[in-house]
Image (cartoon, rainbow, N blue to C red):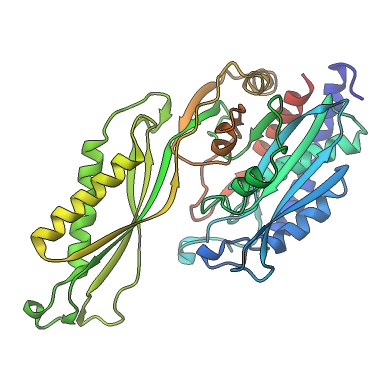
Length: 413
């Protein structure tokens, strides 16, 4: 059992020896793809099997919560819950990370192999090394230090490695909260290392609402040499995309300084393939919007604006349309800066990094929102270069090591 803060120096010294452990972890699990079926993958089981093997070395107990999903070969999606018993077993300090990643995107834009952990100096490159491999490594490293030094923490230490975060958490955190009602207690301390800034000074305490839309415009297919006999859905879809972009940004233009960026964002992203050949006018065009909306606005209102704009546009031009909601996450109440987890983290960052923190909201979505909806405070924090979802995604080993130090200090102090 850790009896006083003098043990902290022993812990921090041990963390300084973790560089090769961290590199080896990355080299082992980054090549194991963990993509949702929506992203062309078979889920997280292959990656989970390796991470379970690692976790068994350092944690007292391992529980696997399987969310049924007939779309993947295993028939379910895995969620790993690992715990180390503490002196006070009535509460737990949790680190929560997700195993799944987004696809690599345009391979030609990468200078390294996306599904390898390529080490260049202090940087490790690869899809998922930051989002959310950084949280995975940090959570496992904390368990390793406690086990290697034979330290019983002041309360339980728990690590959750969950599935399906990238496409809505239906088989991850949302499933666990629905089926494991006693997973979290009101006095637990919860850290989600899934967002941050380059110097580690930002603690995220709030998130915007999220709305993902698929918009389909239908016209009439025809030959490109006779456009008068067709109705070009591709042209109309592009025009409607720009119209929606203009209307949404001008209608929902309030600013909230808590958030970065301070405004709601409405980004057209994906476009589905239409015709195979150049000389055919498409009769169908499908595009997508990713909307991150300040909590002051209703998602129903935003959706109504989209439908009204599309209806007016298509009535004037004789095309058809449909609007489908792919993902919808309402905003959760923010975590108070005065909560115990935020204050523990604030003190630890000051001790280890010697910087003052700022409390902010983000447009990105994390597991924190679902736990906040239960009325439990959650801090979202890590040191992040914000290369997630980008080509040449990378993480700085020194940042990971410092994050482990901060997390262990948060547990001890």
